Length: 250
Length: 255
Image (cartoon, rainbow over all chains, first blue to last red; front, side, top):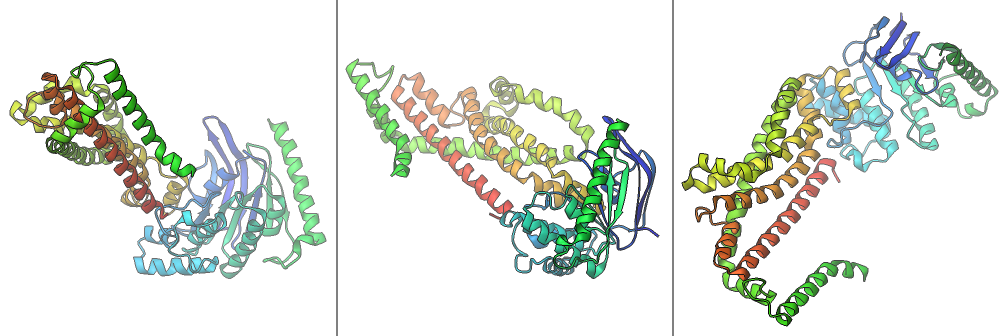
């Protein structure tokens, strides 16, 4: 039984086809990385999985109910007029949870992403990495069954993104939500995912999949292992093939 | 050092211009009714200051009342329009026509409606018309300016229309509203002065009336004195609004 599944979906926009035909099933507790060239429809696939958009063709099946799907966008996307606490509490308040309980749960979520002590700060007072952590806390506050990360670390420096990758894996190991994340970075995909799905040039289809071996969260030094290198090679190969396939289709 | 120079620069320029003006008036023996020297303007300021201050307050208070009226009306209409795209389409052309019609052109009409005995009402009305649009268009733009990803987040958590309005669109509009009010306040003073000119009687004794009155008697130095007060009042209002906008943004952003 999958948490969310796209079956032969196609998405057409007025300017042309954005995605598909494309299929993807996400199992419970799975971490899936979507990798593909720019404009291949990764973000469109994410919006379908989130239920924010309907496909032109094909089927979307989702088991999580209201509030059980969370999305983290490329930018932190925080409300500048709200404190970190109020930003993290927003999903709960929209669901009608009382103010005091929402604040307490937001504080716990902030503590889990390492932001205890900055609950009252406004987004403008936080660094890019801290703002992204608030965004992550906001996503985790409802204890989602499906967590969608759309290039969440793209705007961050390498050290911050590595730290955040480990943090996301540590958070995952506590509650084991299904995670789907989009990235341009092959090493990040292999490091964080239990399965990497490579898409062709747009409109995206599946170019191939790599099931990533090794324990999650990753042990120290995983990036230097032979397994890691081999799997990065495999994904890179699929990516090159996907680019070529896109050319043929176009 | 450079900071002091930067602060002093405008004052030095003004002093130089005044000295040049005074010297030219004396050297060319310019008639006082044509161009009075700064010393004569200063003398007029000194003798008339009580009347001028009263008139300035008169104009300013009219403009501020107009700003309040315009602010309430513009935000209420923007809210209604923001809830219905069809209504916005319906209102826009009318709003544009009203906006591009010069206030001088509609002033006589408003004066008739307000009644010649109630020039004050006409002045407030006209200043409010001019002040209305910056606030209205700022509010309409602001209500649509929310971060699209935040809008998606509200979709994701199935927010109600009221939640979306109060927790996303209204707070997102705050910077646009601050900017709109800043522009509107300046325009309200212009609107009030123009309306006073058109009203043209002693019914409302604002600064424009002082200028008209002195002009009719060829007391040019007193005209200049009223203009100086008007300019100072405008500059003070501008500075106050800049500060208010900055403080508002600091409160909104938390820094």
